[in-house]
Amino acid sequence: MDRTIMNKAFGAKHEFLSVTEAPCVRHRDSSTSAEGVHKRGEMQQIATANPKRILNRIADCGTCQLRAQQNRKLNGDVLDQLVAFKKHHSRHWAGEQLLEQGSTTPTLFTLFSGIAVNYYTLKTGERQLISVLTPGSLVGLETMLGASATCSTHALTDLTCCRFDTSRFRDVMMIPELAHEIIRIQSAQTQLITLRRAAIGASDAVRSLAHFILDLHRRMLRANMARETEFRLPLTMQQLGEALGITPVHVHRVARQLKQQNILSIEGRRVSIYDMAALTRVAAIDVADLNDLDNALL
Image 1 (cartoon, rainbow, N blue to C red):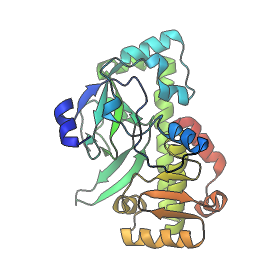
Image 2: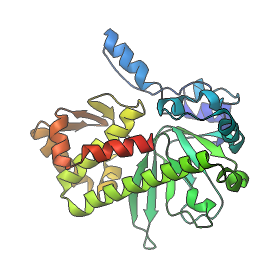
Image 3: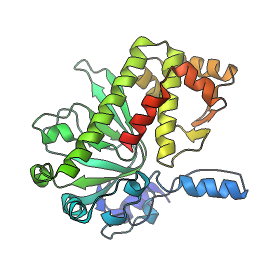
């Protein structure tokens, strides 16, 4: 469906709505096998938002597909408080800014579907891609604590968010179970950024790219946005270079080196992992630490 027509049909780019079924990913797969059909179904559970399947009805937090995937169960009273805390669902197009760096406007939301990125812009204008956000990521907590937004957050793909009533934040933080969930998610995100910054600062470009691809693949796989050995890279080569602190030309050179070693290939936006064990070795990742982070983030 043409985006211009969709804008006319749905109104403004930023629209409040509710999701009653999982968004659908735009994914091409020529496989006609039963396994291929099953895999396509899996990838359609949590992915980029498809407005044609979004209905304007109140989303039922009690049957939230994302929380069910994450195996996060809440008792009745706490669930009622969560329902009251959630204000609405919002839809955003790829490229739209969700939060401006330096903003002091209280803002709090979690990513429900799609992919977003955090950028930090220096006063001189240079920009660094700080982190990639997948479903379940929390955005805006610092603005709820009296600070300004550290980074700007942008939609990398079409996406949807669960937005919360900021006027109820203090009351929510008095509920131990919900306060624990908020702190857990924010802590895991901080740990993930620390690992990524360490990989960039203490490693060469090959190890840094391997670390980035392995981390992103694991998180997208947990969100049913990837297959066991392949996924669609949501970043351009320019953005990937910004995330790694190298030029796009160097990204191509490093990717070619990993392909020659039969570890992985990046063809257009498709990443294929040929040797997961070798990729893990090159990335020098402690799998146990990643599993702990996966469990915390999801």
